[in-house]
Length: 100
Image (cartoon, rainbow, N blue to C red; front, side, top):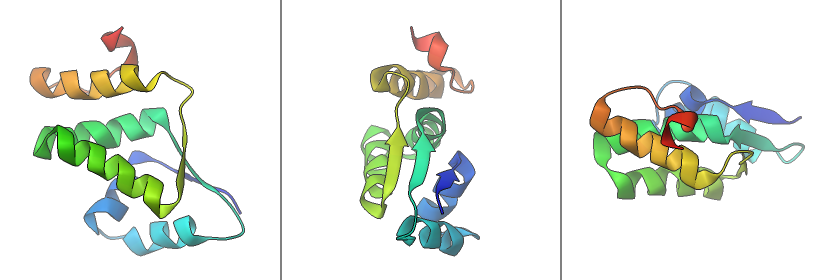
């Protein structure tokens, strides 16, 4: 079965919060693929960047990739990463179109 991770699920996995074990099981499911869309990855990137900085945000994305998440980057990665990083300084929610 395929799975789609939203930002909350990805953050639960990364931060070992309640539900992390269910996300891990989905990531390890050999009978399907676990997808995360760029918009959800942007939210994860934003959250980690806001609390821990650029390096940790990049590391969080790499952890998801290494765990088996397949990224659907239907948007340009530079666009959604810039949106996530720039919203840290303004305190607003990330908007991929705002970075263009």
